[in-house]
Length: 298
Image (cartoon, rainbow, N blue to C red; front, side, top):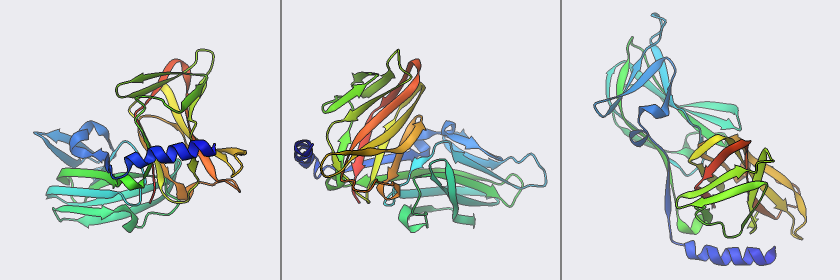
């Protein structure tokens, strides 16, 4: 395995200087179909996203909408909210912080505001709990029946310098990857993972190893699934290449961006290196599509 680490480090040097911007969510690009409704509604009206309170209780003048997906928490990520116009009432913008499926905290980033302007936040500056793996965003309109506004954009993104990328995989070829109980098909845009007919789950893993770290993050994009779910696992080894066990980074996820800061992972004692392992689970004919995986340093 030490030889593989050396090969991997040499290959990584070619990536230095190649920065990558990851846009986890952009409201303009995603459109209104990417949102879920609480007691408000969001609709595209002549190219503008209109958020309007629609609480069924006539005494309650508040409601919320939120992007349907959760997104990886990256401390250096940029969060931008741009409200173009407020027709009536006020708005509140919240960040919901999760570890796995458990809600840790809800943060009022903006509360009961009437200001129409663009605001940019760095995620590490808004009070996110250190145990957080993923976040959701929620937009409330309130303090007037039918409270409404025009949302110009909501964007969550991070720019990663090339010298902070330990590895990036686009899955258009599978050099150094092997698999078990899994059929894999590469395409010009990624790889489809299908559990073998006789199995309900299969895996593929990167045979190179990365050094254990308490900083940085791992990010994975899944553009499509069919009757299947995915799990990202780390197989962990000590300095003598003895297997210590596996860490489930996230489990049973569907489409979208997924990830975790390394700081929240519980490494076994003596952990020195790890290998990336992807699982696809589902019945015959199911599949998971993957197209981007990055391991980044702080």
